[in-house]
Every structure is written in C-alpha cells, then in structure tokens.
Image (cartoon, rainbow, N blue to C red; front, side, top):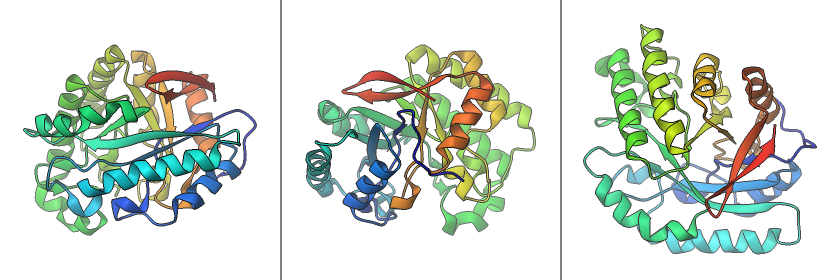
Length: 277
C-alpha cells in the first residue's frame, strides 16, 4: 500500500493521539509523517470524551481536553512555516438516549474545531469493533449487529451535528458480513441520501485495509450509492500510529475516481475546501 508523497494537495482528516489510550507516538511524530507525505491538510480528530463514562478506556478523559487543545496549538505553531495546515477536530459517537449530554459538552467547543466526525462503534452494550470482543459476535448475532448498526447510523445522520461520516460499513472489520448484502445496500442508500441533504461528507477510510476486512470503508458498491446520492468525500487514514498517516491514499483516490469523484474535501473553520484527488 502506498504512503508515498503525492504531487496533488491532499487532506487526511481522521487521525488520533495517544490521549485516546489506544494510539501510540508523539504528536510531533505524526506531524513529521504528515509533512513527509506531502499533505496540504492534516486533521487531528481524537475521540471526544462524552457522554460521561462512555467507552472511557478508548477515548480522552474530560480533563484531557485542555491538553488536547494545547497539543493542537503547539502543532500549528511548529507547522506554521510549512505548507501543511493543521486542523482541529474531534470524533464523537452516537449514543442512543444520551445525545443531549454529548451536545451539551460538545456545542460550547464547536468554535475551536474545524470540523467534526460522527461515528458508531456500539450496538447496545457491544463494542463490535473491539479486537477483544471478536469472540462475542456469535452471541449477539451477525445480522442483528449489522441491523442495529444501520439503525444507529441512520438516527445519527438524521440528528446531524457533524461534518464527516466515518467508516460507514465498520461492522465488516473482522470479516463478519450481513447474510443479505442487499439489505445493507438498500438501507445505506437511504442513509447516504439523508446525509447528502445535510451536507455530510462520506469518509473513505483506509484503515479497513489494515484489518481482516482488507477493504477500504465503505465497500465499492456502497461508494457508488453515495456518489449517486450526491455526497462529497473525505480521505481518512484513522491513524493510530505515525506511520499510518496518509496510508494507502493513492489506492483510495484511485477507487474514488473509478466511482466518479474528482475531488475530496477538507474543512477550515467549518467551511469546505475542495482538493483534487
């Protein structure tokens, strides 16, 4: 998979820091990797710590937020003289019944962020993408997990409040596929239509190439549905190590062009910036 420097300006909008407790490497190492990859925009988008107590082992603690913003300020200062723009972002989850709590914590901080990423990592109490929970998939039922995921994602998109829909077929991570792929396509087509109407971008997330699924999120047939729905796209490596920055972006760009896109999107202070693929 290519991580080589590319001549066209690109943006990696989905990356993490060690504050999330499941990433490694110093912020300056990620910055150096972004510069080496020739990125025009690098978005730091760690897991937002809300609602209280939710998934606490895999996201920032509330007390870490001042440090997080301090890291972002420091990175911007270091990158100031270069051609790389450091973007401030956060990834937050849909938590049924608790989104009022999430937005109560997140909304006052929106002016600090260039964009926000929306994700679904749980169905009920099941963290379906957690490597330590793989053996629990049969107990929850593969189709039931997929169906619950699609319901949560649809409800999240209808609620809105974010700019980028992350890894939209994430349940395939460990190779578990719905027994009726046509159901996934039909429901996701509706979700993409809702998202396009709200101006939400679809993320091409290359982390799927680093796991059992061995496939970019989302799959090609879903990408075609999103293109028909009129969605714009972003590129995201979901980097949890410096060497993941801009991972397989040439492959992602080629896939996007094969579907019909000619550009991808970054966000600066909430405003979209279109970049060639």
